Image (cartoon, rainbow, N blue to C red; front, side):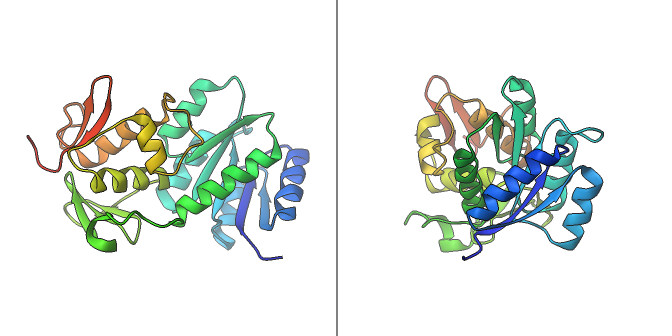
Length: 239
């Protein structure tokens, strides 16, 4: 069987780790396991996976702290595994850089679909629209430069700014559709991320994060503007 990718499962429940490892292995993924943050770091030192399935409610160092650690150091997909009632924690997870979440109890088939989706976005899967800017080169966006081919964002001084796969997808879509109002539903469609509902706060959270990265004053955005009751619009030059 062809290996679909590498997944690291971080959960302090050995039964859950075993179940996830068995199911994902059966679908072609190479799976490693970790019970806590120390074990996770040890696995990362051996090999950086494509996706980390990270339980939110770990004993000791919790999943939010580990998600922040991962996002600051590695270009990989992060899926938070949460309890169904942890709405606030799911939002915070997205804010610290998780790409997706799945709530317990979940259907393993949904988990595989989300792993596949995050891995595809992280690895730049899919055919970009014909209007993609700079044909895979760099394009200015706000105060930064977006490396379309490399899925990287650079500040004006040349330093790299950490970027999740969904944040990259949003910046790419905005760069492809300047001065055009895009609704949340359109943004979800154009980023090929239909797992979210159109009125889910995930889009708003990610826009807020992007503003902190590309705007001179995130509280008074010049580039990623909110159009009330309509959506968001990218304005290449300050108006």
